[in-house]
Image (cartoon, rainbow, N blue to C red):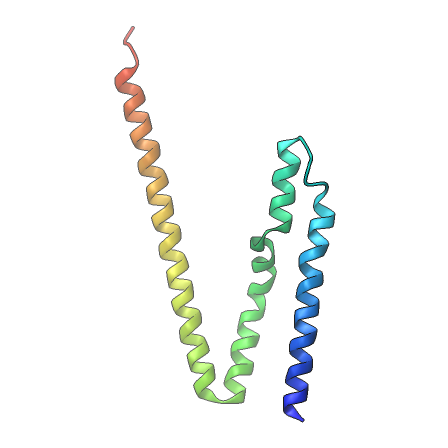
Length: 117
């Protein structure tokens, strides 16, 4: 009985995911638009970052449900979430550091080749 319930929930989840990914594409507009601003809005609306923003508040509930099933899956889920969060933070810092270094390098190069008045 539990297997049928889980299979049904997975089917429901996949159906909702399919609908959720198709709706923003229609809202985003025609992909052949010439205006770059509207294309960027469409890409953002149809991208995964918006969905991640709305999925994030559900993380504590998923952790709680996993812990209520059994403490070991709850602990493994918590550890996995912490590892993922630490990895994301380190990648963001690395990306920001690279962008700052590239910007600084360009500013220095530009100042060297600018004739003094």
